[in-house]
Figure 1 (cartoon, rainbow, N blue to C red):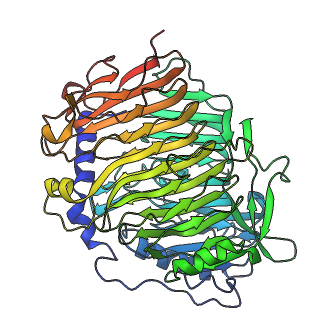
Figure 2 (figure 1 turned 135 degrees about the vertical axis):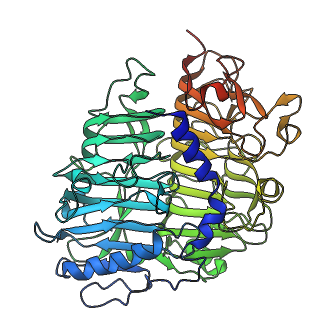
Figure 3 (figure 1 turned 30 degrees about the horizontal axis):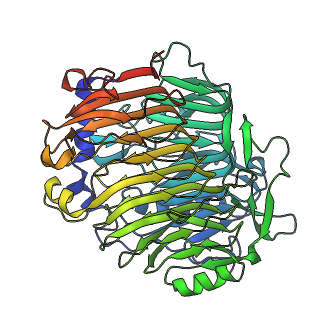
Length: 619
């Protein structure tokens, strides 16, 4: 249950992180952890030192030591440049007497290499705890950028204290995915109630997973898609389920605040690396599915395609974009090994069916105002597991799907898919872009993205007023294509509209937005004569649009007197339907209405208390 005192304290701490993160491992000049491949955990040639592959014959103590060393570096390394991927070949890791306790820090991927999650079993835990900024100030609001996938966690808490033994903790916020995971032998908690008590988190995303009883607890928002759950309890604001067997009913909304779709309208599971029966590496690319529920891997695993690793160009930081584009033009797919890539000109995806897969949160940084990634309007392209950063020179756009003004082609049977695609404007350094993600093509699937103009970081700003003038992010997402679907759209802090949806027949399942914290004055936050910009804008010419489970939050810490007229702005047409939407005040500023002048103000008389509308237009 939210209390004003607790929420205000947590949000204030989160907003004040700028000074604190300077003590992270990267800022303090820590040396990156490196692992030399050995006979017990060899990595394929070309994967580099930041990819480690474990074999079941590797002693548990050796695995534990390697992962503990990385966690010690990455637990506070929020703005650092180190990236890591840890893979487990099929088999069992850890025992009843010696469980494997994996703690996952920033920019770390933990994945199994089996064809199915049951092929790799971790006897122990795979966990994320509250991050302690000081000894008595621990929170999960900034537990970003980490991944777990394609394995089974058989929960074993031997050696942990009484509180820690009660569940597998996954206390995460944005830009974190749990995919193709099976949890047995214990419960899963999406909050850490053991480290300085329950603290708020701002997550999150689960897909294609089979889970026990789940304690959502303090998560402000969450999307669970195409999964099975034995039970689900708690929830703060908007909790969304799409195609989830065992999901709670949405009856009684907003108490509890559940939004439940029996089936997911469009889905494609994220590609994954695996080892086939001959010991060769390959990437499995699942097929697109429509109107489905439950996990994909329990029945027909034959849908989709398998691409041998030899059909990928395995890129490393420092590789020239000209070389990458040459290999793509020759028909290669692209595997980005962990690290930060400076991109002075666009990586261009022109061939239908091309797969771009990032390992360990591989990061593309715009240089000289480039657009790091351009995707042609061709069918079947899949981009997954990639982070894209704005650079010091302003970019027009960071990722572009289809060219603006070009007639879009219908690709309904094989849409371009963006999975776990994350954006940053600021944070580790000053960033500038007009738009982060621009979708001009039809029939695109956006499956989990966090589009973030940084509200804190190590850029060296003396205050938030300077960030407003220097850290430039005008619009987060612009969708011009028709029949675009987004499952898990998180967009925050942009300086005009955070999301603009101009295409027809679009669908969003869970939308989360925080308006910018840092407009200096109301004059800086004006849309013509209108006070402020809505967090979600559907274009005036749109005839059909559906939005399920959405929240817009306000925290004008730079100037608490600032107003925003509407959280949502949509055309008043019967085909434009919003289901379960809300606004909330995080302790500063005001959103006057939920949508189009309808709904009470989210002001400081109701801090932390959402203003809900079950449906719009009003029935």
